[in-house]
Amino acid sequence: MTGTLLTALIVAREWERGTMEAMLASPASMAEIIGAKLGTYFVLGMGSMGMSVLITVVVFGVPFRAAS
Image (cartoon, rainbow, N blue to C red):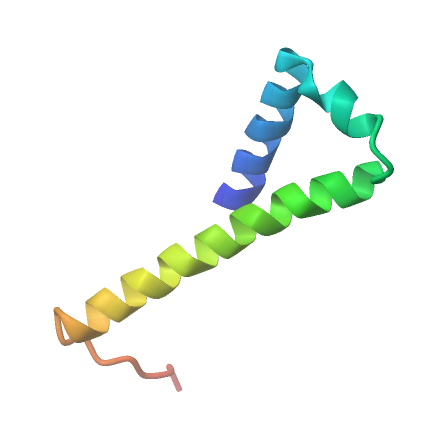
């Protein structure tokens, strides 16, 4: 959810600054531009979640088990 909201904010900022027109003039389609922006925040979000899990398991000693 956070990645989607961040992507929306970044796209809105691109429109405000006028740099979206430059991107639209490139050979990339709108779907590719949005996909690249969404993918970036997805990777960042998954990385931060992974670091949180790693710190929780290693530092705090919380067991990492699947619920059954």
